[in-house]
Image (tube, rainbow, N blue to C red; front, side, top):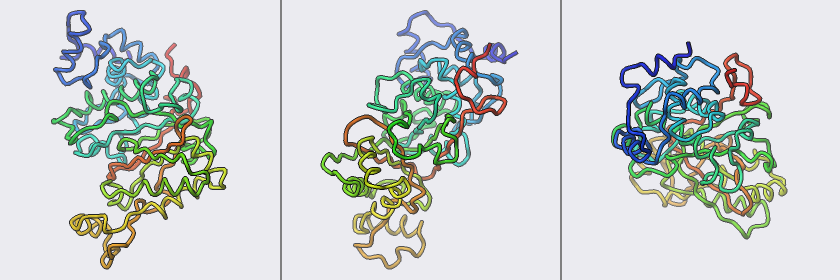
Length: 372
């Protein structure tokens, strides 16, 4: 017994509606079960098709999703995956992302409930990300690729329906963000001149992983003119000096530097390793004290860094990142001389998890999850 029958028989678990896509979507929107976009009705048959790629008991929770702290069982997650239009083969990655977000260090409750516009950013690495077709190149964070759109949307709908992240109820974000619809891409490992993120974090190159970050939208960095590594890095560092991001006020934070493939090539050919890139950015991404308001200096900088800025003058430089190792560097995108800076919620730490089968083996293909 996989638990789907019991799940479907639970009080309120099923409803009967007219077979009209417009009316079904209207009902879901009015009930707070949707993200405002049309959904695929999660019939029992469709949910079971999604769960065909789940090799663990369907009724056992993989975590609890705040602020409601609903139990994220495979059956419940599958409902959101169907609604999002996800392919069943992508279901193991949806589960993996939610499992990572439920780790304590990620602070999902804070990200869900804050007035800040943070959303869970998902960066996938490894062979299964390629197998299911997650875009890592041109328009990786934009429309056009089903895997990116639906994996991210399935996670969002689970955050709403299991976690209670409903605007003005569990989600108090001041003005929201398009990243709250879907925020999912893969690293462009083929065009990456350095080791990919998951290898940097101790995993094997043939492991499939997700790294989740409580992040803002990307802030574009345009540099079409610099032809040297130093020039590109100087532009990047200068673009990251921002007084209004949360990261500058936290001792430990992990903002993301998304380097486009052309910038990455120029930087690497200039002799910079990834560690050297992080060191340069840490030393040069800063802002003079005079750019901060008196209140923020007193109540935030001097509060969070006791003694450090007691005698600081207006030209004292405030670093955007406290330690080089705190910066997350990934290579994503297609041709074009653009990179991006992604600030974070601040009160969160990233989590990287590897995709494993129920018996603990590292998965090498999504087909290992298919029930026979």
